[in-house]
Image (cartoon, rainbow, N blue to C red; front, side, top):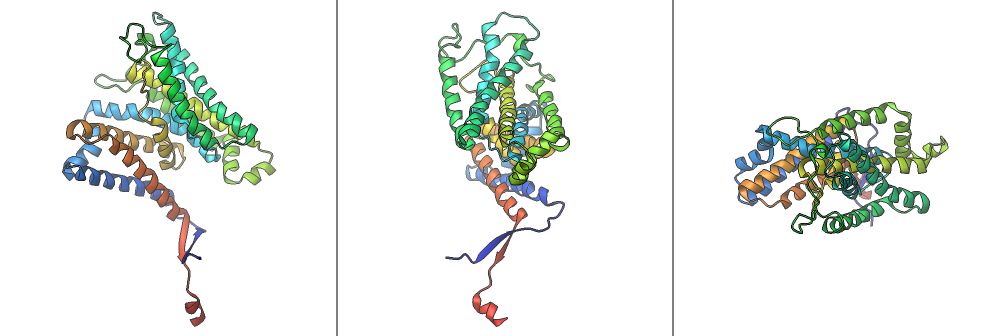
Length: 362
């Protein structure tokens, strides 16, 4: 059965077209949030305030927005490099967990240490653990052509179970009354906060530096150009001699290192120890952030801030109005779906087929 319409790529697009999809997705998400809050018994004005205004109304709340934007920004920048090359790393959550585990080993094993290089060692260890976890998917894809989407997705569950085992066993605090968590980290293993009255820490500067590095890598480096060509025109990339296996390894290792470093920032920042819950889903939310930002480093910066506002707004609504925390997940889903739908109409034109009778009449 032939459909009454056809979809064709647009020959020309407005220079403002890249902004249409993100703005449409953000608007739809805000409206969906207001509707959900209203259905849950929260007045519209109160819902708007809690969702969008309250997160930036106080120094502490602004700090919370920046705190949550840090891992989202860092992970999304790493993932976007691979996504531009059509390498789909869906395992950032697991790579974040492995980074948190790897970064926690030093302060757990050397809990009495006062070595000022402790944080540097934690960052290196966490990045290596994240890369190692991503390397599993890279090896399976390059060696056996295994689908990296399925492999990285399944590795998330394995990483979570490994975390549960470690905090309940080998890495559990012997003086922690059997709670599944490690000992508290020493001061030298904690990221310094940026200003009083807020929890945002120096990890924000690293995430901003990663944004600048990602921009130079994508826009100014030959390696970034090769990755982009491999994603847009794989046949042309092969003809030019660009290595597909190298692109797979590079994309997944960069994403794994960024996610692993974000995991270190969580345990060395707001948590201060290794726990059963390291992340509220930053690895998955960062995928939305990457696409909402158009896979552009600057766009990702603004997308990460918006997603962080949604996180903090949901927390405020949960505490003050009893709104279920699941609302945040719903809004993230709305954000992704509406962005994909908007991109469809930005990149393609829908044309209705003319009936045979109408064609004959002409």
